[in-house]
Figure (cartoon, rainbow, N blue to C red):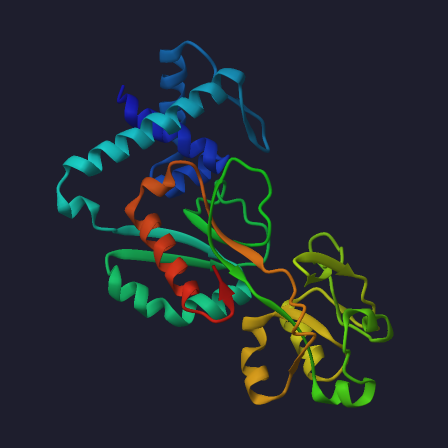
Length: 303
């Protein structure tokens, strides 16, 4: 039995939480993965996975062995890169990336030719989605996320911080006046942006004297989509608190006007997530560096 190949197969099955999906990403028959796992369990003398019709779960021995496999395979990758010569360190191969829809379309995809020119041997497979993708189960190499990260087994590398602003259309300001301070927001109407996943409205917050102050803003319209939030603001339906990059062209044209600029909203971290051990891959490493440099040159993203 090829122990390294068996470890790689076991890790991929666990990450994908599916024999079929693991087989797809490894380009191997499902039966081959099943046979490899059975041989590995027989060799170790213990059961590594519990299988039901819906999902897989690690046994206690399996969890311990999985952790050891990650460490061993990462060490092998790192050591091999040191000896295989300059060509081995050239980023190449398929890189699966998941991007939030609006962020991907506005901040990343317009500059993709630049990445391709720098790393022509990297084949990008990009999914745009605002749902919470299971990175390991769906075979994603890395994913961009905005906001505070939840505790998980994934590694998070911050590549920037997204600026937010409070703004309104001139028509709204003519009708309701321009708020001169945060205290005046109680007499204004805001466009409520709520999470499509949880149904909870996103907080409006402001940095006042280096302290974060949250304000309860209400209004007659609530939306669960960032583009819809901007659309409503453009029609003068209320104040909006949005990512600055989303409305940059509207601010430049005068279709929207920033208000309460002395008290900016709290920036949100932008992070690149990837499973443990993936950063040893040159293609993931260069993408992380490239997207960090891309954001560093954007006025609407701070570092």
